[in-house]
Amino acid sequence: MMSRLMVLGSGGREHAIIWSLSRENRGHELYCAPGNPGTALLGANLPVDLSDAASVLALCREHNIDAVIVGPEAPLVNGLVDDLTAAGQSVLGPTKSAARLEGSKLYAREFMAAAGIPHPRYHACHTIDEARTAAEQEGLPVVLKADGLAAGKGVVIATTGAELEQALQRFYITRDFGAAGSSLSIEQCLTGTEMSIFALCDGENYTVLGTAQDYKRAFDGDRGPNTGGMGAISPSPLATPEMMNQIDALVLKPTMAELKKRGIVYRGFLYIGVMLVKGIPYVIEYNVRLGDPETQVVLPLIDMPLSELVDSALAGQLPPAVALKPLSSICVVMAVKGYPEGYKKGLPITGFDDIIDGDTHLHAGTRMTGSGLVSAGGRVLNIIATGSSLSVARKQVYERIGAVKFPGSFYRTDIGI
Ligand SMILES: Nc1ncnc2c1ncn2[C@@H]1O[C@H](COP(=O)(O)OP(=O)(O)O)[C@@H](O)[C@H]1O
Ligand SMILES: [Mg+2]
Image (tube, rainbow, N blue to C red):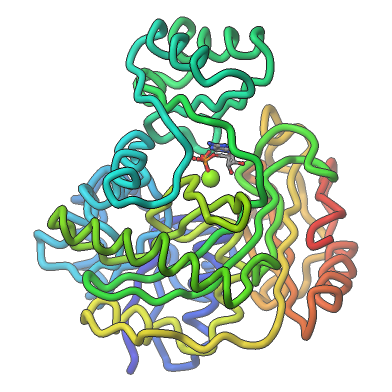
């Protein structure tokens, strides 16, 4: 059925969502707010400030939107879904109280403890003295996590006393994270391998949409600073049927039961990061949305129209499972030298004649100018490929990336190895 759908956000994730909806060929009318030059090729971009619920609602009314899909976490944590729902707008995304699973790392840990979900030992700390005492009790290495949203920068793994002291100074003296870092989860540092699980929830039921492995460090060999994500593959090589059963029994089912117990109706995407330690999936974190760039690899493998999934989630009638294509997908992020710290903007991008093809290229931080496409962020483009195996997809993605150029670009050469 044709719908008028609006995706909120402006990154590669949102371009991937719009692309998936567009390729259903059901004549949907697609809107992206605020969107990027990639989403503008597939629908109408509507400039808006996502922290301003009244403006978002006015756009929905003006364009008669049937359903809104929220991309990023900040508007969810701020309660945008509550405001839109109260005004009668159909919207897919968790409410403010459900979004605390991502908005507060301490709330999430308390939730996991109450639900009996495997998680690292943690201490809730609200002052520098509490944090120092807890860290000393844990011993090195120790994990320090800002309680609030920190755009992927709020976690420090201190391996020496000096690193611990420096981190404490940043949280409590120079206050680099403001209020988000004034409470900390001080955690046992687990060692293991990580994977991400993506589910969709309809308030009652959930369906697993896929799994991914992401690459957070800036440089090859997992070196360099943490970033928003430099690449991803799907499915995760760790996602054996046995492990997925474990995750279902130890993580997903208890999460749903605990939500119910707390009277929280969760409707939207749920992305769970786990670390496997001796075969047990320990939850590292909840995210109350899809990942970027994980969405770019998860959506292409779902063998069902995304709009049907959205409709069924909104109607409380999710199918118990979705079929996945027996393929592998890969995404490599092209970034600007200096990212994630300082970097230039406005760099001209060339070699992108077929960039409109969302099967192969998705926009992240780009901007269209009178003289062509330029960079507008640290992560600029996502190059993607899908193949019968990871090595086939990998070969393809690195052939594609060679054709795209902008000054000072860099990307990891070891995604999917
Ligand atoms: N308790 C822990 N033990 C070991 N590593 C951790 C722990 N918590 C987080 N990490 C590492 O830090 C990364 C970021 O932590 P996460 O909780 O996912 O925060 P965010 O994604 O919001 O920055 C994780 O992907 C993981 O590699
Ligand atoms: Mg994370």
